[in-house]
Each structure stands twice: as structure tokens, then as C-alpha cells.
Image 1: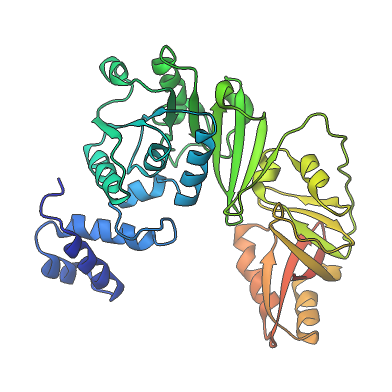
Image 2: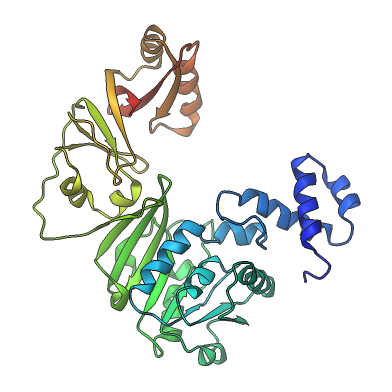
Length: 383
């Protein structure tokens, strides 16, 4: 499967890819198994910001589904607080989340139906110096596989078919519904990695929905069944590590306004998806009001500057204009802005046309952020 593929050959493949070698030259230089070498090399290059190591074993598909190392560390640390001693990952892929869980428990199992993924995971465990994992190449739902597993917690990060029109449990592979049925006689402690866009009412169990924001983007939805839950809903901002939990006893202080104040506060998607705006407003050290709530952008506003680990970014409002690209461009050129970042929700076919009009002939050192709220353009600078 990976026989004859050495670390030296993969490193050579990475260097040749970076130098722009085409397929014919790669085949000639790398020789036998060149396609597999190139696949691993391309995955390592693409994964440079995902893991702390640059020598992990994976293909591009394995990389796509692999948990970011920062997220894997966080979730493993959370699990440790429950005193868990054993865990099974029933769709472990290349093994990143499993490996970090294994660092926090006495015994771990990694199951995957794909023998190549199991081999990748085994080698990656060696890279991280983890030796307490039993790897099983099998169908995780088969009765004989289930009988082999003796774990307090079952974790599953199922594959998400890209053509799914709507996020449903039954469409994931393996389906969390089937995983639960197969292992519920052994434990009531389950952790499922779910698509963040999935509606919570589609999940039939009681527990906690934890939305994870990584580097300013919604990264994961982790569902914990009731025995592992700490709240009904939560949001975690990584790598900072702050956490916000639902609290139904808080007074509702969320107010809306159509007029921006002197500052804009950009709210992480994880907090919005978790419906924790009220909890956020209680954490902020200043009075704020909601200004915009869209799928990809949530804004609050106020009259005081604020830095908070719960906010994505704070901006100072410079001007409010009608949203007309030419008028925006006139203002930016007149005020000496050399760059403009558009933070607007417009049809994809219109985006580049609008952007070109706004950025035409800009010169200067300053950078503007352009927001669209209703029919208004809010010109702001980042703090």
C-alpha cells in the first residue's frame, strides 16, 4: 500500500511541486509509486497551516476531513475534565483528533473501513509519539467490530457528501443515527462532529451543541450527549480559548438599531449560530445594539471602542453613504485610501463588478472596510 514510499521521496516530491514540475517530470524523477508520493506531498504542502508538523501522512481526501490541530487539542482538553479513561473514534480517518484524544486517556481505539486511512493514522500516531491506540481496519457498524470495543466514549466525525442539499444526520457517512444504535448498549456518552449548518432540531438526543470559531471562521459543530454536556449551547473562540455558554436566566438586553454608532463590532459566526447574542452582550464592557445579521456577517454597533476576545474585530466608523460604487470610490479617493476591503453580501455575479468600481484609482496608505447595511454603505477603519 505504502511500500517503498520513503520520507526522503515525499520531501523530494514536495520540493519538485514547489518548483513547478509537471506530471511528466514528476513521474521521471520520482519513479515507482510516483502518483502516491505526489498525493502525499501535495497534501503536506496544502496542510502547512493546519498542523504543527510537516511530516504527517495523508492524502488530499484525508486532509479535507482531518480536524485542525488547534481544535483537536481543545476538544481533547475538554474531554479530560470529565475524567474519561477510554475513547473510540469510529471513523478515524488519518487520525488527528483520535491522536489528541489518546494523549488524554489511558486507552483508545481507531476504526476505519479504509485500510489506507488506518495506515496513515498509525504512522501519524508514531509521529506524535502516541502508542496507546488500537487500530482496527473494519466496518465500525458491524456487530463483530462493536464487540471488540470497550470504551467509555464514542466519537465520530462522519464524512459529509458535498452534494447534500440539506444537512441531515441520515446522509452522513457513517450516520450518527446508526453509530448511536450500534454502540448505545455499551455507553451513553457520544461525541459527534456535525455540519455547522445543521438545524439543531434534526438531532434527536439531549445534549450540548458547541460551535467552534477558528481564526475568525466557523469551523466545527460538536454535539455532546447529555452525560458530557456543560450547557445547551456554547461557542468557543480559538485559538484564544474563550467560551460562551447559553444562560436562559439572563435578562434579554439585545436591542436593534438602523443607524450605526461611532464603532462597529464584528461578531463571530459561532456565537450567532449558537444563538448566544444575548449572552455576548452581557459579556461586552460597553453598551451595544444589533445592526446586521446575515449568514456570513453579524454586526453590532456602539459609541465606545472595545477590544474583546469574544469579538472578531472592532472598526471605527468614518462615513455613512448611500451604497453606490461610484460615490464610495469618490469618497475613498478624496480621503486618501489606497485599499478597500469589501464586507458586503451581494450576488456572486455582481461582486467583482462592484469591487472594481469601488477600488478604481485608489492611492494612499490607508485601508478602508466597506460594509453594506440595507441601502447604506458604512466606511470604516479597523482598530
